[in-house]
Image (tube, rainbow, N blue to C red; front, top):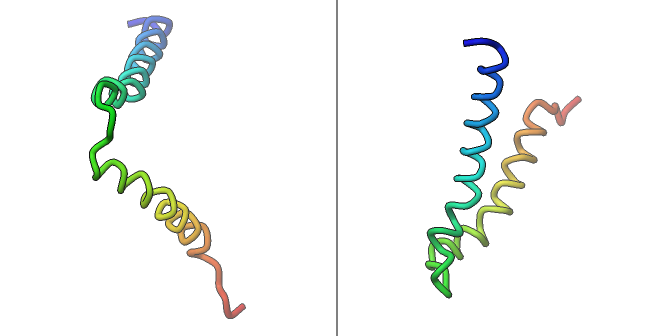
Length: 66
């Protein structure tokens, strides 16, 4: 496979995967008027949890006694 064909195939696979991962929630939950309770719960809990994880990850190597 030539470099151009390989690059085109990689871009195509990436584009299809991105479209599927972005469109799949609309296909699954689009027809329902109300989301399942677990999705509402995760939507309210995960953003602060991810921010805490990122702060801890960034500060893991900081020496507070220095």
